[in-house]
Image (cartoon, rainbow, N blue to C red; front, side):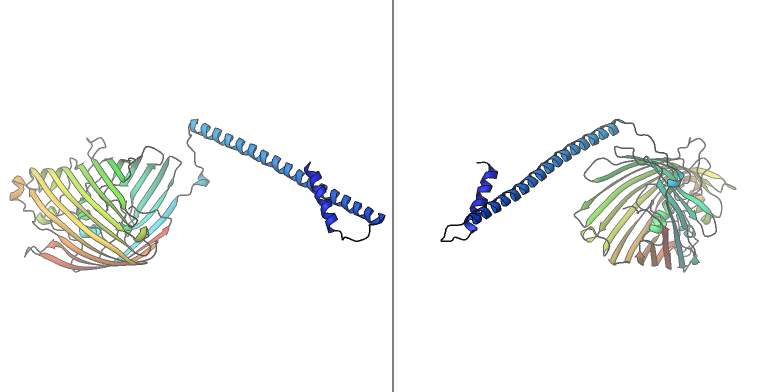
Length: 478
């Protein structure tokens, strides 16, 4: 029996059952009333069934249409991906009104107290304290103006100028860097801080102490950089490994600062090689270890070496080759990888400098010229602990070794100091945000020799420093 007739029969049976049973036989009017009610029920339910069937048919048609539309959209997307993969990408020319470089200004000021003249040199080494250490009293310090941003999908650019308190402006960095070279390679070109060591590429406002480590200060200066090109490679490994090489024109002699350009060098006055390996240890620990090497020529004009001019009172020049080899290690801890509340950082670096060439004693007088070889080294170790939000404390120890110096015939004219400078530093700083920091630091400095006794001159130094960052500023290195 068809479903409709089954439903109608059921309705009739229900109607009959629901009617009261009387002992007497129903009249003709009662029968006619029952027939009308039954007919009305049949018409009502047939109308509802037809409406439901129509809705079901419309829903099935809409579902089939949606499936066809989804299949067509997927086909169009696949075709677009194939076309994009086959198409040759064209450089995007940025419009002037669409450029939005990140611009920042770093304000860095200090107040310093010294027991001895801070401009005197570290005994037996180059670089005077006044060049890279905070001066006496209140000082504006060195401010930095920086701009950086993507040029297009293939390159980014960065510019950083140093604003000296006396009004001088110097370009610290101005370089381009590739974004889509592929296969783990990146090229940087222009003027930039070298990847030599760990601390060298860190800008002064991001240091963990108010001044540079001694080995950084006497071997590399505040930050050693050059004009040239850098190539970095990140191989596809389960650990972080970065390999890098640089070629520069030898704009400065590391640790001395004199211009060393050699017209016969064809723009190649220095080479740097470095490698960094790092990884995470669980969720809370990470490390990085690195090795690096610098080789550069002094140029034919020579450079003033160490503090020999101060010792002799005459002009002395060295010309030859300098090799600086370094090893660095960094360890960081943050509970569950969250450094907001507590974190710890340990860093250490060791450098050795080797000089080989010719030394001219008293270029305006005796002018005695002979061979020269020197081996010096130095290291530092520092630990910084954030014990609660916004507050950190740190401890650092520096040590330099005078090593060995061979003057040959000039040994009769000059006796290099056999003195090993050292220094202890402790600091505490408060950083209410990522854009501001106030630091108090104490140094027990023993970097200068008492000429009369041969003992170290102890200098108790106190620094109060502020660092404020205005504008957008990128993240710092590991």
